[in-house]
Length: 313
Image 1 (tube, rainbow, N blue to C red):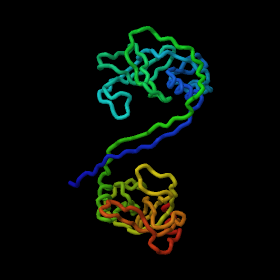
Image 2 (image 1 turned 180 degrees about the vertical axis):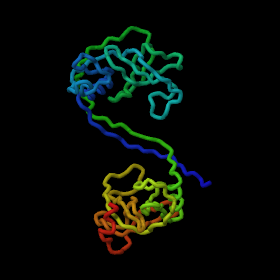
Image 3 (image 1 turned 90 degrees about the horizontal axis):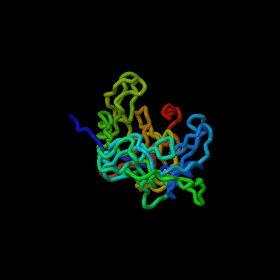
Image 4 (image 1 turned 90 degrees about the vertical axis):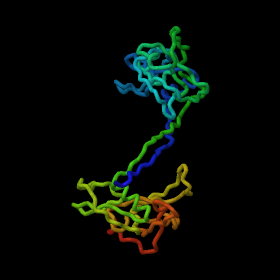
């Protein structure tokens, strides 16, 4: 049985968003040690606040300070915290209805074990030592046996409001390519490009997926394609990617390899970025010990006629 390939992969990017007046006040309040909600037309106070009434869709603007103490409405124990979670030791995820609020806020509860957590328990906010205007300004909740804290009567007006946030989105996972793509990857290590042909429509798919996306039939007949191909369409990249040692601008293109009925993508090199064009004939460039082409460069052949690749755009 062939070796099953797998590899750890990470998809990560910073997500930048601007804040409306309600979210701005909420996060600025956290920075200042104040929890703000918003009042709806029917008198309910929502924490965390939203910009529009979830029932009437009307715009909401009346800010209301609530207490930093509250009641656990439901919970779940987390015995093994992951990277980036609020606490590094086991904790409980809790929904807390803060005093003065009609909805619950999701956060972490620092507790010694699941036996110490129950629905209805009283808790209070533990503020972070350094606060910047983010939900993490609440470090976590902690058990509270004292009296209900009273709001200070804050109006929600601030001299230096938070107007935007940057949230790091990240997904860690293990990828296994399956039978068809494993054969494709293994062929690339030998500097060959192999696709699979559909038994019905006879189209050759590169990279192969193990089934024809048009006919829905399994594919097993291997077909070697390329190595030369044609640029069908492309884009100019002007933003430098993290951990990618390629100077911008550069061109990333869809390339229809000779004999393939599906265009794959690759970087175009060996030519100024503003001279890349549809129909450009290219060939792969391999670096030493590489498992896939580093980039594609012009072959010097005449450009392909549009009719030969128009179905592959």
